[in-house]
Amino acid sequence: MLRQTFLRGLPGLALLGAAGPAHAQFPGSAAISLVMPYPPGGLGDYLARLVAKNLGEELGVSVVVENKPGANGAIGATVVAKARPDGHTLLCVPASTLTSNPWLMKNVGYDPLKDFTPLARLIEFPNVLMVTPDFPARTVQELIDVARRKPGSVNYGSVGVGSSTHLQAEMFKRAAGIDVVNITYKGSAPALQDLVAGQVQMMFDNLPSAFPLISGGKVRALAVTGARSSPVLPDVPTVASALPGFVEVTWWAILAPPGLPADVAAKLSDSLQKIARQPDFVKLMGDRGGVIVAGGPDDLRAAIQSEAEKTGQLIKDLGITAQ
Image 1: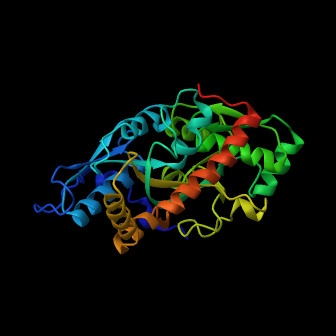
Image 2: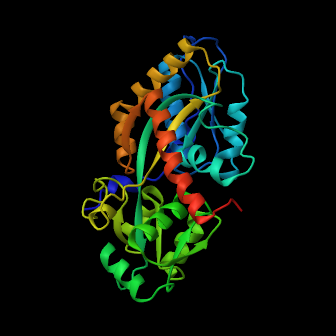
């Protein structure tokens, strides 16, 4: 049964600034700027504001979210890569900004391993594979069978070349041995609208965006892309149940500029991992389909390397470039 707590939307955290106690315990009393390289209102912004609130309380300083959207996160990431390494400028970013952008963009402006100090990998979110309600498939295998019978007849929506919605669909296409056609949109909302209307027949998207449409019967969820079923969609199987080994998640991490002093990096990393394990954080993220990782710098560095290798190979094979 669908968990209704998931429907409590994202807007509530827009009011979080977040201010810490008046006494400053962190090196220096200046506010910390947590750069979110995407617009306000989405999942990433919600996560950043929750992290800012809790980090401010943990460190005893104010933490302020700064939205610097553009170029799939590259604009905000570049700002942080060039910032002063004093611990007062941080980056909250999804995997794609670190692992896809360097392959898609000729001059991305940063090296994901050399130009940042990795601090923590906080959380993973599976995407969900959906079809329009009248599509003649109720399982992943039935979708594959339809696409095989009529190659090129199934269109999928994505929110941009190189986005997770695009790359996961292409990975699915390759793993299933089918021919489905990418229709690119400028955002998740218009893509989902066309999915509801039947202009495209399938789409991968993150759970928070898709859940209201799934619970309202506007679209049909066939599978989630995580290693196991999501607690918020307990009756929906994994893609891997039909295509063994297909596990694709979007993770979010916090990084700092390069050259951050080791003691400051350790303090921030420990605080962020502690925050990710706090019951309120676990519940709020879990209600939105998130799976806590709470990994440190080594975990984050390894995740960047492995994800970049896999994603980079796919981008090279398909000849994808940013538009």
